[in-house]
Structure formats: structure tokens, C-alpha cells
Length: 257
Image (cartoon, rainbow, N blue to C red; front, side, top):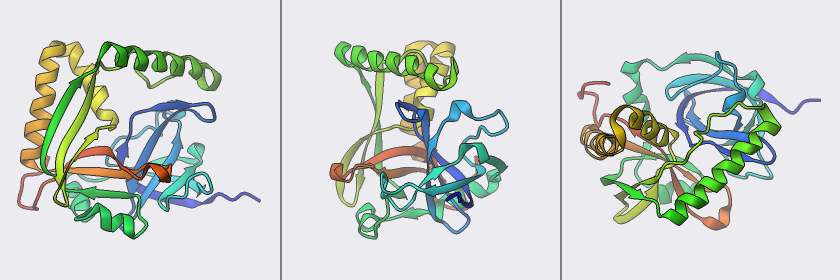
């Protein structure tokens, strides 16, 4: 008898950068919030294998069958998904997105962790967007790993891939204050790397870096920003990861985007 559970329906909040493994091939870690305000981590999500009518973006509402991710992943929000059952059932109205996200924002990651939770949305204090050039050694190492991952895609889906052939020559970070402590986190939001390559083709490298500083460093923090934070699957690492950067108005009176 199948152990698949009835479909869960969530509004997508997080799409982390793709990665490739020996078991599932190229996958994207996805997380969303249901109508009751509960987080759901949906993995593995082989995005390149999804049909065109299944592919989704942030704020899309999706439904998929699932089963427990234990014992490999003991985080309570984690669900192993049946990607073939996935349906895109709608999209959250633009006028409703900010309020939907504001209801999920919490004040303390340490309190969330004490409650056994592994995903949370926070308001960072004094966020500073940092673009760090990779050293030649880092770029070579990352490119070698990317080449290996691209070669592995043949085992799972032929030439299909959502990975870019080249790695970005920069890493993207935020320094911010949370619970009175200054933290620095690498941003693993898929949108960041995709935007770099998209804009570089349009504006050149220096123009792109300035536009990214303007958007992620100035515009978004000024208008209202939230960080989607998720814990590492391996408990011994005991750390939160910056999985998503989201524009969220501070109040209902602000203009919606």
C-alpha cells in the first residue's frame, strides 16, 4: 500500500539555488506556507523534470502528494514530494501578498528553534547587501563542481538542466542584526544568481553589480524586506541559512508591488 499522503497545498515562498546529487539528480529546495500559516519544506523538487504547466514561481500556489522525509530529514516541516502529482492551482493575488507574508513574520529565530521549528520569516535590522568577488581558487573550485553537476544531469534527464553553465564570479551576502547580534549570511535564493546572469547580458558586469546593489541593498530594505531562514538538514551544523529574500511592506498602508 502506498504511503503517500493527501496533497498539501502551499503558497511558494522559497526557491533555493539548484544543486545536483547522486540520488535525485538536479533538484531545487522549495518551501511554502499553507492557509493556516504552517511552513512546508518540499524536497526533492526536480525542477527540470516538471512539465511546463507544473513549473512555478514565488507566490504561485501548488499542490503535491507527499510522505514523511524521516529518518533522513527529521526537520518537522520537511516533506518528500511526488513531483509527478504536482499541480499549480493558482497564484496569490498581488494585493494579498504583503499581508500574507507579514502574518508569518516572527521576532526570534532562537525561540522558533526552541519550539522545534526549522523555517521562519524574519525582519532583519539594518540589512547590508554585500557582493564579494570570488578568488581565482574559489572560482576554479566552484566551476569544477558545476561541470561535474552538469555532466551528471545526463543520468537523470538527458541534456535538460536549469543550472547555468558557468558559476557567478561573485557570492552574495547580507550582514544584519537579529536579536541584538550582528550576523552575516550567504544568500542562496535562486533569484539572486539568475538575476546576475540575466542582467549581465543586458547591462554588462559593472552595470549589473550596481543595479543589484540598488535593488537588494537600497530599494528593498527601504521599502520593506523579510528573510526566509531555514536550518541545515544536518543538526550538528546548528545553523540557519538565508534561503530567500522577499519584499514585504512594513504595513498595509504602503503601496503594493
